[in-house]
Image (cartoon, rainbow over all chains, first blue to last red; front, side):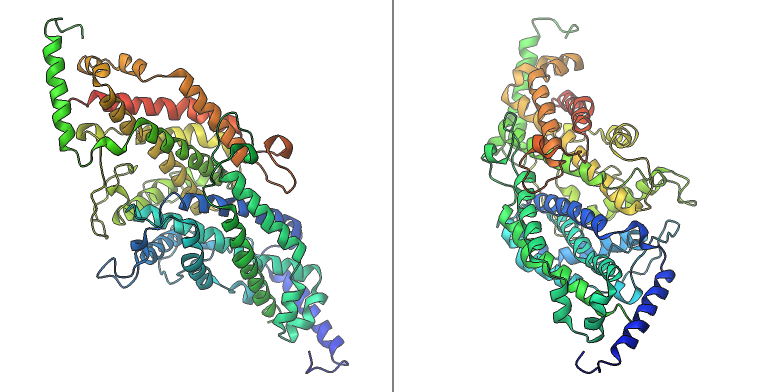
Length: 280
Length: 280
């Protein structure tokens, strides 16, 4: 912003606005059916599945051999990486990544989809659609999160373990990369709020514009509560969390930390990354 | 039983008992660590994952093309069958079916496991280990259960849909085929209760011996409650099912029906099938 004169701002703004309006007609689907409220409702539902997926993974102990690159001997990668690569390649053949909400961790597969191709509605501005923090999600999940909610033990169920890991990773990736859709809707609702910072490539201002502390705190509290409710041991005659006196399958504080330290910040980084490409 | 004289019964009984005691020493692991209580606790946990898996599947509509054999054109089977076949073949390579608790729906894969082989503890009497009702689970799931808890619609997310189906199927298969382990423990706890009916190949009497109506009713009630708790829409400030006034993600009555009409009867059929092979 500092490099532009005040007099040039309205012209640039108008041009940008024209681009926005024109490009709106080029997308596959109008935004009429997608609102920030419908998107928030979808994100809330995704919280449930993220909590479920953590609980499912917690059925198995840490199982360190699954993450040890030397375990497979003649392979160049760990058991989990090989499993995720092969699973994603297969899922791609079955059409998973035709849906723009799904992003693979290893997109270097070659085979075309088996099923008739389908063009999913896609509201994303094409340059922003490629914003991707999969590597960061992968590292966070294995280095930071997994040791927090799994027992240090080995039960040799490595396939079941890494299949559960992949379900967690996919749920987290879908939620975090939803930031692209959130950013698009926010931008379309009030482009004038974002265009100056986008043009100035001012990530810090964009991050501030996208931060709503009270909303984020409410999300973290709700995730904590979901982990309490979904992770309790249900017994007949005991009606709710308080009465059940149960040990949770995943500590609610871990689920809350996941959202507070990683899911929310990563999502906002995706939103910023998307907006920075919004006028390209 | 009718074909045997009363005088020959004690001798046959003693021989059978000797076989039981001898074969106990041949198994890979003693039963000391597995009791009917530890097995019940595991079955209770499996209820949680079955309810979670139904809720996850309910995210997607019915998506009928995934089950229509004509959808893939030049393939001889439906999208879901091809997906399950290929997934199971891959999971087998990653060692899933080395664990005797896991049974594939299509066991005709050929590739050997990638990982170093592991001999899981196996308490099953070998002839009974092959008792398998996978086909019945498959038919029940697709013909009876799925239409009860999915919306009649199509969102084209076929890969995600059938991946959720497979998670449901695997959870149900594991639970139902646990009947083999339950039958083994019950038999070992009091072989004298079962041997006469086994020798007489009297399925009806075995079914009666394995039926505990009050326990089954409690399981169905607990599953209903789990579907209420896990399928509710959690909001901040609302503490339990009654207050939340939510529409459930899967009707609790469907989860209860699943257990009452299929999971419990199928498990008992597995138990009977196992016991009938227990003295071979």
